[in-house]
Amino acid sequence: MRMRIVTALACMGIFAMGCAQPAKRPASGFLDKLSDYGFFTGTLKDLQPAGRVHPYELATPLFTDYTVKKRFIVLPEGSTMQYAQAGPMDFPDGTYLVKNFAYRDSLGKEVLLETRLLHKDPADGNWKVMNYKWNAQQTEAEKWITGDRLPITLTDDAGRHVSTHYQIPNTNDCKRCHASAGKLIPIGPKARNLNHLGQLEKWAAAGILQGLPEMSKVEKFPVWNDSVHYTVNQRARAYLDVNCAHCHTKGGDADNTGLFLEYGQETPAHLGILKGPVSAGNGAGGLDHDVVPGDPANSILHFRMNSVEPGTAMPELARTIVHREGVDLIAEWIRQLPKSK
Image (cartoon, rainbow, N blue to C red; front, side, top):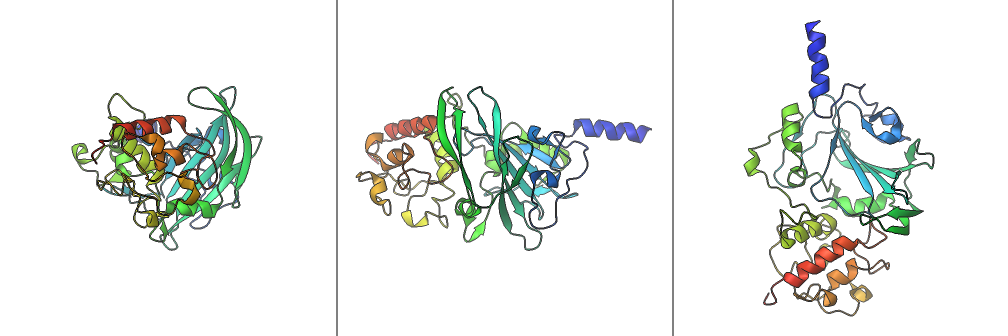
């Protein structure tokens, strides 16, 4: 009796772990339907996590047409993730990273569009990617390799209604952003970006995160829209890191541009300051430099972020509309850059 009580209390107290039945995930490969994995309990669209399915949030997330994202880490039974100071956390083979995308319709109701899975395949230890497209009834998401364009009218963060064709990427598009040195890697779940809302401490206390140092030694990534606690420079650099640096980094898809937008990048030319474009072509809009301190209107970076034209818009993937608040932040960052650099 005492043991049953202890077990019940443990189920109630452990952060987001629940006591549902284990997910029915395969050792390798992808199933046809999202529901087949058993990641969620109850009505599928409610996305209530089952056992060993852990929700998480990022301090600064990637912008994707104002979609609402719900993210989960699914660890194999009896396994833990390992803290990594740089790059993504060290996840065990068999891990799934689950990201659900929904838009807010004109009434503010969330409508699920797609679910993306990253799976660390135990067969070879490499990450694999698969998309799942939600049906109109919101009852199921089925494996979807080829991508799609979905006409929607969304409500953005300022309450404006915006009509667009939401882009579900094909699996090769996913690989463009997630590729590093020829291999796929997770982009978002880095310790510094997860050092938010006390998540790391909770996971360590629950025994699913190993190696977490004293929190004073864990970098805390700026929240891009938190103007109370972070400067414009901190927020802009965090925004550029998350939205651009997975390609604009050594070994990334935009390695050849020489524009490297990692948060820790300190070389002015790599940040685009008074740097001429390398491969922008007509996408440069006739402008001469990636970033002109004090002058966003003559900066290619600002010009391309403020466009939705194919061949000009940056990032090339993951958005079909302009992120007004993000563009405003980058414009302010450029205005505040010292003109002497």
